[in-house]
Length: 493
Image (cartoon, rainbow, N blue to C red; front, side):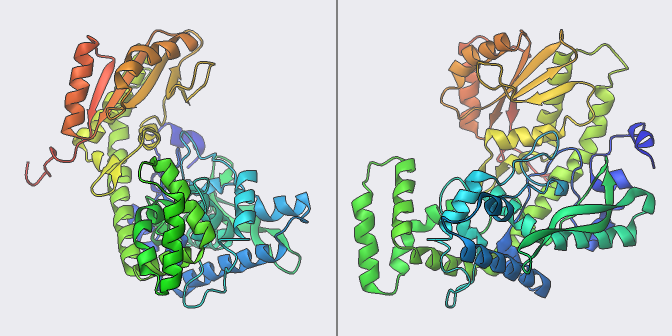
């Protein structure tokens, strides 16, 4: 099927739809059904490789350790800039369509800051990489050194180091289940590392072709939706109990004494976390202790990641597949006069229906795991924008701060969409002043304000604020009910 033929049919936003492959075929092969218009917030967790029962996954984890050992041997102040770029800098592997990019898959490279963090950590928190006694070696240690290296960085770095495996995984699927006209041979740079020449090699693979680029499939059992199992946020949450788990009473006393000197009761959360960072740097054995505890929970890690991934597929993939054709029928540009404001409002209302009536709330209001931040909500909202006739930009900054979305059709038809969490203590001020500033900066007086409520208390607060501002009947203000406690299942409704 040609690109032109595809554009004349219903929207095809997932790999299975675009290439005409059964979702069950993908599932049986073990591959996640990726979206090919916008990244999905899924991440490769290297701990799932370590704890896997599959020998090839364990080998991949060993492969990551070997590369870290190579970097450790090379690390130091004397490295040439070319070597640093070659060994420490990595581009995001955008062709797997996973991560935090909205309206596409062009993410951020693992550049200078990541390289500096990695090089520094090889001298302290990762200094014993590959040499721990009785404790596994984990790339995720890198995520424990500070707030700059999170799940997306760890996932991107892991993807780069196992890229050859993922390419072969995809190539095997393409040869067995796809037609030749949907695939091509691609020379992929930095596909595998050659330790003899100490350089990255370009290798050729037979892969699915999408808009003059290739696609990479990822095994579902490598993926997680939230933080990696070993993560900085989890370490910070569990830190209070770590010193008590130190067997040596002298070391335990030293840790507690040092923490007492750098921590005081009235610290902010930021100051407390900084104090924990100082303790960890002074006593890096705490990291190995934490990781040892996490290793004991390996079976739980696999089960939890599978449940989250299955839930994401069910809610995000299956529901959006049904929602988008309905939306397309409503917003068909050629059926009726349609302005950017009408387009923006209709997409927001479709998103509201998705969250409130089609289980979409489960993605952003996760039981026991907390509420999604604005950035995550906007990412999910971005999927509703596929195949629009309008130009949609996320957070264009026109001098007065970034707005969440600008929708336009030519220079004379522009509208804005601004997302707010009801929990925001500045909700009233932002509704009253901030959006007006954004409108002036973008040369428009049309905007849609979206307020997301996770609890009954937030709903009551929002009602009060809207009444006080006298905009409770304003159709441009859309309140989305993302509560879990007022949505019975279909079997109980």
